[in-house]
Image (cartoon, rainbow, N blue to C red; front, side, top):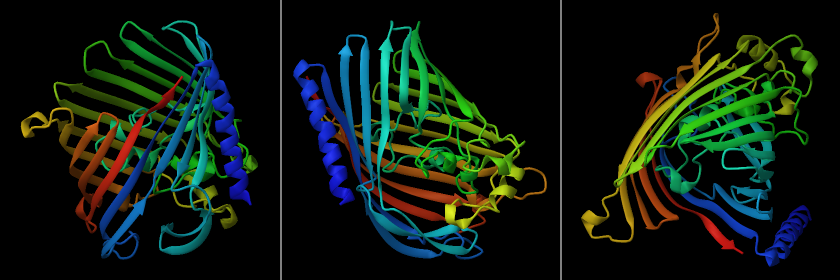
Length: 414
């Protein structure tokens, strides 16, 4: 019955937008992916002292399908919303949890999600000044800005940023943005994170508030993003995030008097011209009072299904990748064929407060080689092979073959 009601609601929203289309100010777009993976290792990195055991397994998935609807009320006021379907929609699924350092837990969670990823109204005063209010993407890092499947090389979204911060990260608040003499800027004030969700495997990522119906905003967060686009094909920029987290938990009294400020700094760059694409980024994060937060989180009720594992003081991620379009060399005129290579380092337990030792399983180096084929500018077929080294080689290596199809574009504009 719930699925039927959700479908009725979705078609009702689409029908309402269809009425707006009569004014010829309406557009529909979106993006999506189909993914196949083969792994030569088991899913449990705690299966042995050397990490995951050798295995041969495969998965297929529909990671996400997003529909975007936009409507221009006037020439300078626009409404935009995105509805995201993750892993085929919603339902119930049983998940085997490995992160509890050898303790297996059966948790009942959503089999997928239907998420309102964006929902905002934008007022444009000029090219230099725009005001946005609502639910929007947080401008931290490289992947939150370039998260469409046609905007990165790998068959799956690059794993490093996803291991330490939410991707795509969307929160509710106010945003001011614009373009001034070759520079794009964004200033955002959004609701903060929930310190109970922090963990060893994913640092502050689990603090993104989607576990409960209401989002706590006692602690707000502040975001700055600045990018230079004054030279053809070149985009370089910095982004930063700062906000407290301990008063956004469901029972704030248990962390009373403890500040859990999260600070994240990121540098990113891209060159895209003359058939060559080179991208790189560096991200570093700090969590205040990580040891105290870890101690309190270990005592939480398991019914809340928080990780309850130690969270690090610092997390780090950096990567570089390059691809070259060889379509003309092999006789393809209206398509693109781009072999690429990528190197990435990430560690969700880069550094701990004194008295704690980081788990080296979360220190990972990844080398990926593959190819992207674009039969159309907004449609890509990808194949790649990733070699993952854990703990500087102290644990068993993990290798993955990926194959995916992705698209992104505007379907209708009236």
